[in-house]
Figure 1 (cartoon, rainbow, N blue to C red):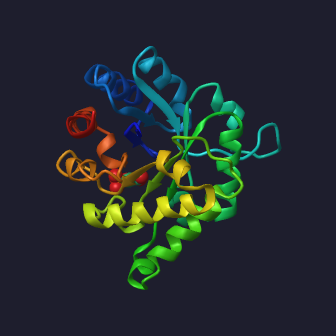
Figure 2 (cartoon, rainbow, N blue to C red; figure 1 turned 30 degrees about the vertical axis):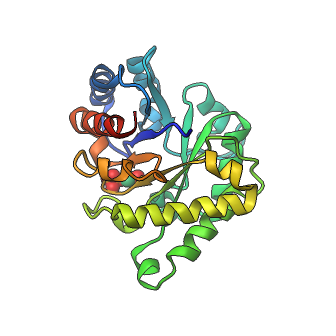
Length: 252
Ligand code: PEP
């Protein structure tokens, strides 16, 4: 039995006051919803503030990225041991890290292992660009990103992967539930090829890309899809709470 997840990625949004307010409003709206793991991932600079707003609640805290080492000369970076003092989850390999900041599969793999080493849960993102999709490369991209991302990682039960087709992120053009389910089944089969089917069956694989309160139920109705990673719609307490409520209605 895989516990579903709804995770919000705030990206480079909010200010100190609005970050606290959003986290506080969200806690009030969703604290009592059960059966769904609820996660918010604010910018690094607001993690401590948001942690205070959701303390003692059922809403968990995640970071949006990490360096793969601590205590090194890496100006501007934050390491996994530093994050471990504040968060439970870390997004790794988001498409904006891969495609805007040039993060490689090897870097994603180092980060996944570093996050696991400090007993945090990575949310490892994979997904094809529009060009790759149109060139018929979706399967090979997903197999490569998944396989290299978890290579040698010794993933725990419940490991989290987010399938985020790049063309669906922030575009208002979500994948169909059929397409998302098919991609997620392929990702699960790649995990099974590396670690065996029993382990793969425990892995939570989320869909991400223009998820809204109106389309979340369609994804949650698919048994292969274990929840969602949400960008834009996580920036308002009302819409993010509505997504969590709708997800809980289907699977909570
Ligand atoms: C994301 O950035 O991970 C994402 C899915 O964004 P959006 O929901 O805005 O498409």
